[in-house]
Structures are given as structure tokens and as C-alpha cells.
Image (cartoon, rainbow, N blue to C red; front, side, top):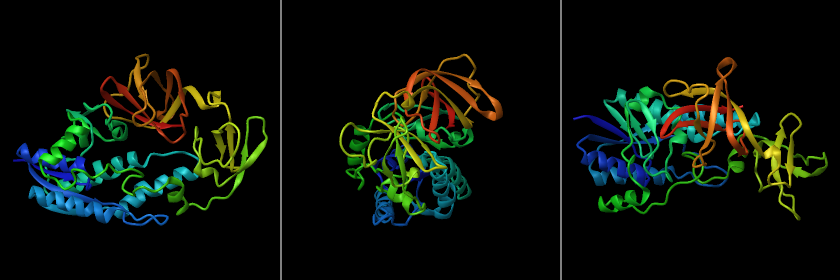
Length: 346
């Protein structure tokens, strides 16, 4: 009988994952990853409730339960990196960082050292011989967040929800009598809770006001810090009256945010980009072949071609323009249902 350490987050997905693995005959151990406990901007971190819910789910299933404390590593490899990226004017994804460094690296290593044969999480994704494939429930598919996981980690990972839709997961949670059956899905920054990005970053970055400038070079008002804005952003500019404004760019050196009132401004859409810090799960994409690019979680797939460039970069040509491709975000490459990998938009 193989032993599986299941990452119990305190939510319904991971709880049902543990129950399904138990049904399948695995020796299941529940693990809560204690990654973040600090309150932010007056908002209480939900970790105590999440831990209690995870412990309650393990008790209901009568499985062993452990807590792995990864707070120092999460701060170093996720939060500090995220803050530094925003300070540099880029827009990172902390969930991708968390999966790469914590869940499918540190948790995997710690679980194997503690006697596990495999790990499991409540992600909606599929694996096959070290390959990553999209989930059956395309509306819940989470492979965008998993593209930096290694083949070696995928070979040791189970995704019990791979073939299930969310309503079925809720139904199973009720059937199993899990205390998380009706718990709402979590929102916000990975493990930190429902805190606004500006409020979170303000705890670590001292931002100063600067000019908001249109395409003609006219100063329209003042922003609260260029670090808080991202390409395509519409809200939070404080420019009242008339048509809405959209962020088209920013200059971190001069602390300037550039805007337009044209929702289809050429500065908001592009049919090409370059990716750096590339990670391929298997062989790299072939030049001249058509693949699919996803620029955000649940964004529509766009046909694309790739060409290898200097120092590990790749130039990507899109079949049609994509809106607000933003430096720092991830561009993930698919070949049908298979996730090839991807990189960071330069």
C-alpha cells in the first residue's frame, strides 16, 4: 500500500481529494502547509480557520494529520520575489511561484523525507507519465498555475480531481460528510487571503505619488505609486468624469503612469511577445509548429508559433492580438491538452 501525503488547505477540493484517495486504497496522511500567518492591512489572515478546517476534515476521514511550517521559505521564495518584481515594474503571479517553490518542491521533498511515496493536491489538472494535461472541467482547469512544476515532481503527484467538475466535488463532499462541503472557494493572494493587492504591497513598498499622462503628453492627475498599476487596468486611477481611462504603460524611473481613453488603443494589444526564464516540462516547442498560448488563468487560448532566441529566450507570434500582455506575467504554452511549459513576458 502506497502512502500519499495530501496537502489539506482547509478547502473542499483538497478534502475531497483525500477522501477519494482513501477510497482508492492509499494510506493517506493529511498535511496542512503553514505558509503565512500575518494579518495584512487590518484583514485577518485566515490560516487559523483553514488549519481548523483541514484538521476537522482529517478527523472525519480518520487519517493522520501533520502541519509543515514553511513560513520562512514562503516569505523568501514567494513574497519577497513578488514584492521585488512589483518594485521593478513587473506583474508576477504569486500562485505560480508558490506551486514552483513550495507545493511541488518543498512540500514534495518534506513529504518524501517523512515516508511518503507520493503527494496529492486538490488542483484541477491531470498527469500522465510526468506530463501535465488540462483537467476535464475546463472551467476550473488550473494548469496555468502549474506550468513550472518539474516532470520529476509530476511523476510523484496525484490530482484526484482530474476528471471531476466542481459541482460533483461539492456533491461528493456532502456524501462523505466533510465539514468543508459548503465552505466557499478561497480568493485573493495565494495563502494570504482576501487582501487587495495595493493594501498588501503597501506593507512592504513605500510608494510616492506621480503623474498620470495621456498619449499627447498631457498630465491628467496624480497616481499613488506606479508600482500599484498594471497594463490594461481601468479602475483605481482617480480620474473622474468622462470616458474611462486605461493604463497603457508605466515608467518606473520617472514614476509615471501612461493612460488612454481608447479601449482598443494599439498600446493595449499586441500580436507578439518575448518570454524569458523559460521552463519546459518536456522537450521544447518546435519552430514553425502551431501551439496555443494562455496569458492568464482561464483566458482564451490563442494559436501561436515560437522561435528560440538568445540566452534561452523565445519570440512568440500570436495568430491575433492579445490584450494587455504585461511584463512579469506568465505566458503558458499548450499543445492541445498538454502543457508544454512557458515563461515570463519580457
